[in-house]
Length: 424
Image 1 (cartoon, rainbow, N blue to C red):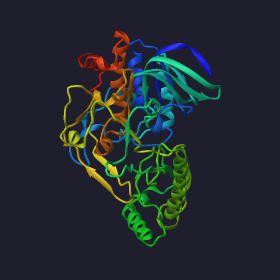
Image 2: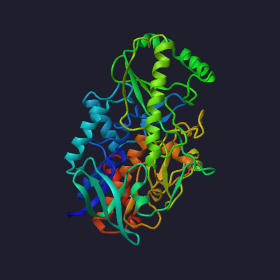
Image 3: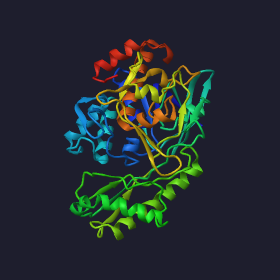
Image 4: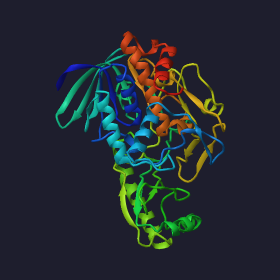
C-alpha cells in the first residue's frame, strides 16, 4: 500500500452535488480539501444518473405551482443555477439542465477554490482509533493508496465510509427493510413533440392496458417523462427495478441489466403504439442506475416524517427543504405523496449528519439519520446540495478551532452560511 505524504484538513468521499458543496463550503474558508470520486467527472446523480430536472427547491403555492420568489435552497446550489444559466445550460423553466455543462461548471468551481480531486477512485477501507478516523484507503489505477485527514465527509450517497468504519445504519422501511425501487433514466430522440403532447393521456391508458395483459413487465403504474434541453428529445424516469439492494455489488449489477431491458421494452411500446414516436430513436441511458434509497446512518437525531409535515424549524438547522414526501412503492406499483405545508418549509438539523460514536466524520446527502418516510423528501438534489454546504460550514469551524464535529457552535455555523447566502 502506498502512503500519500500529504495530510489534508478534510477528505470528501464522493463528488456528487452534496460532496462538491461540502468541499466548497470548507475550502472557501481556507481549509485544504481533497475530493475522491469514482467517476471521471463530478455531479453524481445529476450527471452519471441523468437525474433531471431539479425537483422543487422553492416553497409551493399548491401541488402544481411553485413560488419562485421564495427559493429554499440557495448558497452553493444557487451559484450552480446561475452558472448554468450564464453558460446556456439551464432551461427557461429553471428546472431542466444540461448535465455536460454542469460537469464543466463543477470542474471550474473545484479549481476556483483550489480543491484537490482524484477521479476514478473508490474508498475501499477505513483506519480508525476509537471514534476517530485516521485515514481512508482508496483503490484506483495507481493501486491502493492510504490518505490521511483531520476530518472526513461521507458523500458517497450510500454511507460507504460510515459503514466501512463500523457506524450503525438502517435500511429501508421499518416493517421489512425494503428500499424504494431503482430507476435507470433514458432518452428518446426524434419524437414529434406536437403529437406527443396531444397523446399524453393515451400513452398511460395504453400502457396500463398492455401491462394488465402481461405485455409490459415494468411494475410502474405510468410512464413518467420530462422536458429535455434539446428539441424533439424526451427524458424518461419510468423504469422501476424492485427488490434489489444498492449496496450489494451482485444485486446492483442485476438491477443495471434489468433496467436496460425495461428501457428497451418502453422504447418499443412507444414506437409501436403511440403517435409521435414512430420515428423515435433510443438516444442514451444513464451510465449509472439511480438508487433512491440505501443505508441511512443512526445519528445524533432521527429526522421523522412528522418533523417534515409539521415544517419544524430546528435550532441547529443547516438546510431547508420543501419537496413533498415521495415514496415509490418498494413492492412495485404505486407512489405515496404527502405534501409539505404550502408556503412553508422544513429544516434539516445538524445532529442528523453526525453518526453516533464518531468525532471527525460527517455524513451528507441522502444517507443522513432519518426514517424511511422522511428520507423520501430530502433525498432530492437541491436539498442534498444544501445539506452538503451546511456540513462544510460546520467543518470550516472545526478545522479552524481544532475541535470535534460534535462541539461546533451552531451560531457560528449560521454565521458562515449567512456569509454565503445559504438558507437554513
